[in-house]
Length: 237
Image (cartoon, rainbow, N blue to C red; front, side, top):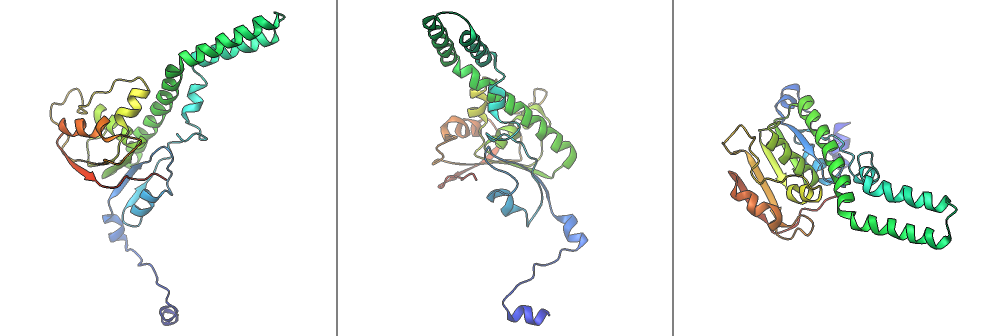
């Protein structure tokens, strides 16, 4: 059978022994907004490490989507309820139209707060998932991309994690500003003065979503990290 397989040009994957499998580093991968466990970056690492990818569920159609939390914002619910009430009322049509226009204007005026509520709810929910994954997996290192990179930064900041970390275009400043949350550039826990010494940050000057100047340049000045200037943008799934 083996000889025929070799003649046919097929190749068997090497079978790892128990000892070899134990030596594989345990990696917690915190994925980006559109990613999942089968996306190119975690999939490329999986043959070489023991990979754990918790499902954050932050994409638009998933359970922890920002849209879900936007719909619970009082700045959106209030005008919608008002518009429904006006539509069912016996008021003159002109009053109904005026009321609905005012409700719509209210949504436009408060759009930043509505978006902030969505991102904030989604971010905090996914942060809790990441915390639980840390406790369950007890990884040797954390690899985090974009949205997941923001989570990794928050874990470093709060002291939940202080181990080897690879940040790929982390959307730390971008997401926290949009969520209207505090965004200190120093990520050391409050009770620690020593910077993290095992963080590798990789970001591209060509990144058009998480702009390099918004985060990585300032961030790299405030921590003892290795800073890599990639010529190509790290593509999401």
